[in-house]
Amino acid sequence: MMSVRSEYPGTVCSSEKKKPKASEQRRIPVAIVILAVSIFVIGTAELLPMGLLIPIAEQYGLPVSTAGLLVTVYALGVAVGGPLLTMATGRTDRKMLLMGLLLLFVSGSLLSALAPHFTVLLAGRLLSSFAHGTLFGISIVVAGKLAPPGKEGVAISYLGTGLTLSTVLGALLSARLSAKPSDGA
Image 1 (cartoon, rainbow, N blue to C red):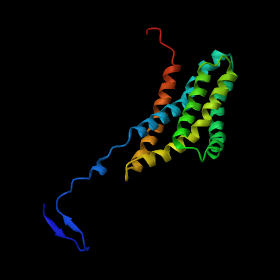
Image 2: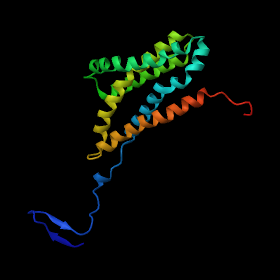
Image 3: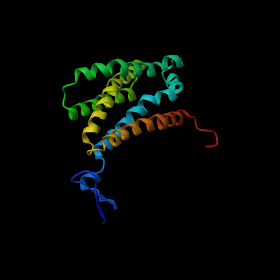
Image 4: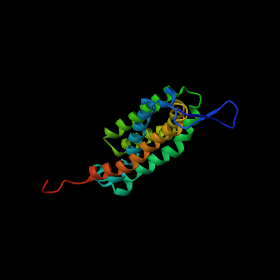
């Protein structure tokens, strides 16, 4: 390796690349991938009813416009409940908060899945929505803290990828679930 004195005292320029240090080779922790998958699931769950409004309306004997409240109630829960929950849990341990938010989301989702009546389905969607905004916000903070030095942006981009994929694949999944099988299938 050929070394050349730099114009800055105490530094040397090299014509060959140095091998990166072990700390620079560190990969994104699995916990960040798990957060990205969680965001994918929550994002997909948010969008899923959009393609299922007609079957949901038929199942509960409602107009499609009433079934559309599933989307509206969820959005209101995120917009109102998210900031309130974030303020209320600001001093909570992040790991415990993440687990609690995931539990809240799963509880609301189970209530929705098992709903015997439309009002119970709405209540489940509302419960799930409260976790949404706070979970996204705290996930970004946690991903930045868990990332190796200099990889914070990459770690946060994993979360963005989870959200983006949920938007694209969630819409596809919703459309696929609402499609009626053809006579020839």
